[in-house]
Structure formats: C-alpha cells, structure tokens
Length: 521
Image 1: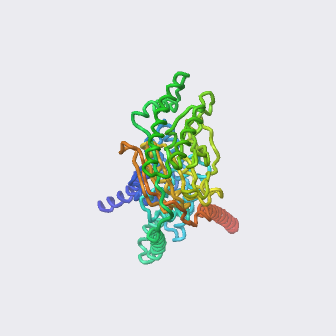
Image 2: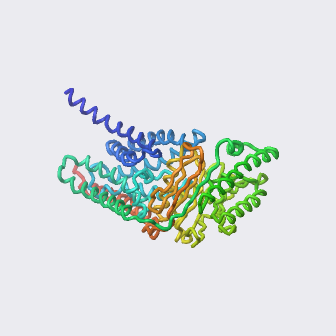
Image 3: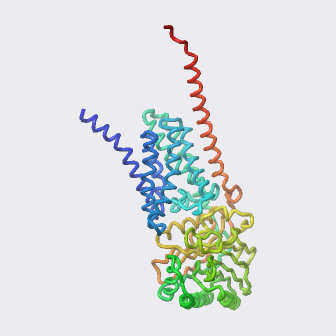
C-alpha cells in the first residue's frame, strides 16, 4: 500500500516539477546557453498542461511564466519593475492561451496528426505578434538556436517561423510519444517521421555550410566606437536626458563640448584605420553627438576625410534640437570616396520608451547604393534589425552589404547581436554591425563570422575584418513569411473545425435526447 501511495505522489508531483523546470528554461532563453532551453521549455510546459485539468494548466502556465519572464526582463529591459512584469504578463497570457487551446482541441493521447496543432499555433502567434508589436521579433523562440549554425541555415528557407515550428513540434512529439508509451512499436513510426524531418534539416544546413565558398570579393572593413574617459561627459549628458532630466542652455553647451571630444576621436581613429588599409569604416550608433546646427560642420569634415583617404565612411550621428519635443534625429550617413553623400538614413524604429517619445522616425525603406566599389551597400540602425519584413522590401533586393550601427547595454548585448545575424542568413547579405556597449560582428550571408568584438572585454573598441561582400540566394527572399501565414491558416482552420464539430455533437446529443420515447406513467 505504501509503495502505491508513493507512486501516486510521484505522479502528482512530476507535472509540477516539469512546470518549474519549464520556467527555469524560459529564464535562459536570452542567455548564451539558450540552445537546450529552446528545445526543452515547450516540452516541459506541455507535459504539465496535458496532466492537468484545462483551467489548472492555463493558470499554472500564466503565473509561472509571468514570474520567470518578468525576473529575466529586469536585466534585459532596465526600467520599472511594473514594466518588466507587465510585458511578461502579456506574453505569458498568449502562450497560456495557446497551450489551453491544445489541451481542449487535441488533448492527451491524441493521434500523431494532433502533434501539428501546437507548433502551428505557436508559430502563428509569434508571426502575428511580430507584425504589430513595437518590439518586432524580439523573444522569438527561433533565436535560441543562434549557437547552432547548422540549424540557423533553415531560416534561409522559412525565416524564423520554420525554426520555431520545429522546436515546438519536438515538444508535441515528445509528449505524444510519452502518452502512447504503452503502445510500444506503434509509437515508432511517428518518432521516425520527426527524426527524419530533423535529419533532413540538419543535413541541409551542414551541406549548405560545407558547400559555401566565398560570397564575393573581400573588403577590409573597420568598425569604431569611442568609449572610456573621453566619452564620460557625453555619456553623463545622455543618461540625464534618458532618465527624464532637462538641460538648460549652459548644460547643452557643456554636453556639446563633451560630445565634441568624442567626435574628434572618431575622426582621428577613422583616419588611422584608413591609413592601415580599411576601405569601409563604420561608427557605432549615436557615438557621434552634435547639436543640430553643428551637423553640417561634422559632415563636412567626414566628407573631407573620405575624399582624402579614398574610403567609404558610415557616420552614425545623433543630432539634437533642444527646442523641439522630438529633439533627436538618429541618423546614418554614408559618404563615398569622392566625398559626396551616397545616402542618408534616419532610424525607422526608435526603441519604445524615451527614444521613441523624443525621436524623429524615418522611413522603413532600407537605402541601397548599388554597384559601388564595395558592392551594393545599404544601412539600418540597431533596433531596425529586429524587423525582418523591412529587409524584404523590393528596394532592398540585391543588397550585398548591410551597415548596422548599434548601441546596446550589457543585458542584451549577446542576444541582440545574434538576432541581427539572422537577418544576414534570411536574405543572404553580408553585414557589419558596430555596437557601442555591445557585441560588434562582421558576417557573411551564411552567418559565418569574420570579425567579432566585445565592448566590455577590450580597451580599444575597433573591429577589423576582411569581409567578403556579396549575396547568397535564399528561398526566404522569394517567399517571405509564407510559413508564418500558412501556420495561421492551419491554426484557424483547425480551431474552426473543432468548434463546428463540438457544436454538432451537442446538437446531435440534444436531438437524441428529444427522440427518446416518453416513459409511461
């Protein structure tokens, strides 16, 4: 009797242990060690939901996921505790609803075909939310696999959505196999189907990387960030503004003077890198800061340097107009070897919060200079890189090199850099990303790294690389987000059929009840 009671206690306790384990996995999704949590989190959460009544499963996922994600957000998104947990609650609510739908529509011990509902629904949820969310694709499950280049190649075909589908399908198949474990060999064909699909995906990625030659002619590039003591005054002024402080006329003059020292260092280092052979130089986002009236003078000096040294210079500049409510213009200006401006791009996606409230937002259209001496060169700025659709615009087709200046903070430095690399693999272009307080990287269209720099572990923040510039053809560039859309259609169709089937059953049951003969008195 004691043995049976112990076994029963274990059976009751195990799903709750899986819930806690899933929450622990979710807290690691933005870390460098996110590879395994990306596979396990969904499987653990689904095991919990399948073992509980629908309401209990929904409440458990909602509460635990909100707590775990909220705690993780405190580091990733510095700000108020309420804001961190508010964002966590929104995400947890939608995820809990998807798990609830799976529990009600598919449920435990369903057929193998039922394993497709949860991945389709979760993929559609991520795709749908990315279309309207001010944070774009931030938090997409696919990003957890950035440490597996072989798997990342899948996004060249399906975008993020195929990889998200695969991870959630694993969770669904694993639970299906566990629930049918007493059926022995009948489980093997279903497991074999998943293993076969995974094997094909891995083989595709491995062959794609193994057959990847040089994507084009190598270009010597340099990314520059000025930090440390020379930037202390500039950082203090920016921090004061971001925290809601106001600057008087004297404060603005002091801020401009402190920023001028950084601008001088940027120009000096740019000249030095040009002397050392760099053909293209990029400054990190907003590393150069000026008052609006000072911008023409800085641009003139950058143009003179580019012309004298015959280099391409990507000047990322934050210009302020103190008298305006939207005082910030966050801009990337590409100057050619002839000293002329090739294009100017204003950040299209200011980060929600202070930047979005005080910035002039630009067009989402990525500027592209075609057939230059360093290929077809385009530009975007930091957070813009979290919106894949912006790089699928017809004007972006043929892009061979993306300049992506960025400004991060320690909590997001690793995941934000890895997310940007996905854009290169999706569309097949090379990318130079220079980040202030983050990870800088130079990659080609396969995501292969040619140079990397950690702002927090080096004193001189200059990234140098021989970066092949060219374009790798990808199916995703042709079909776009078709996988995300198809997942939505499958989900809606499945839900609609389940609703119709449920109503039909109730109607038939009611008709059957009415058709029974009335008992004689």
